[in-house]
Every structure is written in structure tokens, then in C-alpha cells.
Image (tube, rainbow, N blue to C red; front, side):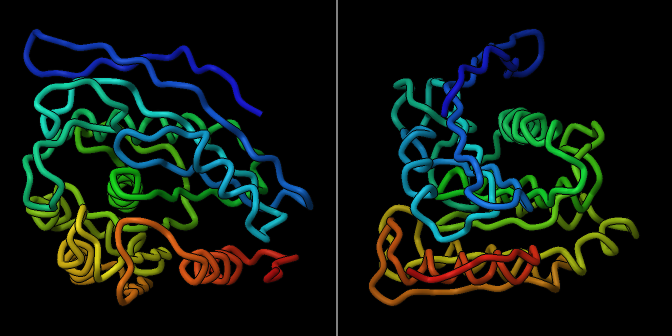
Length: 259
């Protein structure tokens, strides 16, 4: 199932604002009892359809998957050529300049998708590459209780999964959380699962590993980091099996089975 999302967000600074419209959203309905909803975010240049086809095959009958498509926008790393992207990026690393407005807008779009889910359903966010970076930004917003722009973060997240990604705004995280007791309280028990291939030639393994260390030292104590020898910038069955096991355990799901 898929549907068009006609909402648009403004991006830019000062008096200049660029409006981008999010693309088509694909939904994979649960095959069993609906116990959790997870928004899954694709990587740079991809779309929600490709991941919805992968997620539909996972042995997680109690999860509803929502797979949105990022806006098409000029991307600095492509010399300004338009591509689907959750935020602008000049280089793929945690040391790149942060497009905080783009990150906040995409995190708000994800929160909006989760806002209409039933109250008894647990909510999560996952992603690959740039989608993973956006998911990790959402995790820090949840722990802080607000977006980078100060607006209230409205969703009570239960888990975040990040595959082959990096942590945006890592250089300013300590300053943002300084003196925040709410952050420490929320972050300490919040489940985070990061996976990264040691052979990744797109988002270097060191960025994923350093992101895990930064999040852990910031207060995310319930964090698991899994590395895979020889894995490049893609997924493998071993990785998706571990994601399934982790989600089942941390979301308290029933009905999980390995094929």
C-alpha cells in the first residue's frame, strides 16, 4: 500500500526559504496483531518503495512499517544536483556541516507519520545510511524533548535502529544536553541498535563506531553496536536477522520466527 503525502516543509536560513515536498509513502501492514509501528528511512537517492519490499519479507508479523520518501532537493555532495535526501550534506561523515533545519524538518515529518498510530502500539524509527542519520537525530530529539530549533518533540519513541549511518550534530551534542536532567533520564534506558560494515566505502566504519561512542558517552546506556567484517554499504541476512531479534526483545513483540 502507498499514498502520496502532500505536506511540504520550508528549509533555508534568514529570509530565504526553500519548500520541499515529501514523496510517496509506502505502508506494510502487520500480518498479525499490531504491536509496533516503525518508520523506516531510506538512504540518499533511494525511495520508500525499495525498503518496503525488503521489510515485508521480515519475520516480524506484529510490526507495521511506514516507509516515506524524502524530498527531492539539490544536494551539495552531488554538486547541487537534485536527489531524494532527508537533509543537505556536503560530505558523508559526522564531521560534515550540519543541515539542522533539514534534519529537524525530516524528524518532524517522521513524528507526524507516527502521531496517528494507536496509543497501545509502540513506536520506533529505523533507517539506512542517511536515513539512519535522521533516525539518530530523532533519538536525540526524543531524549532532549525538543528538536534542534527548540520546538517540542511530540512522540514517545520506544526504539531506534541505525544501519550504516552516522550521528549528525555530534559536535554540538554535549552543549545541547548540558544540565538537562530530562535528557539523562530519557537517554539512559532508551534502546538504540547501531550496525555497521567494516568494509563500508560510502559511510566509513569509523564514523559509525565513533557515533556509537559519542551516544554512549552522552548517556545512551542501552546502546548496542554491531560490526560486520567485510560488509560494505548494504545489508546482509545476518544483519537483518539480528535486527529482528533485537526489535523483538526491546519492543516485547510476539510471533517472531526465523525462516
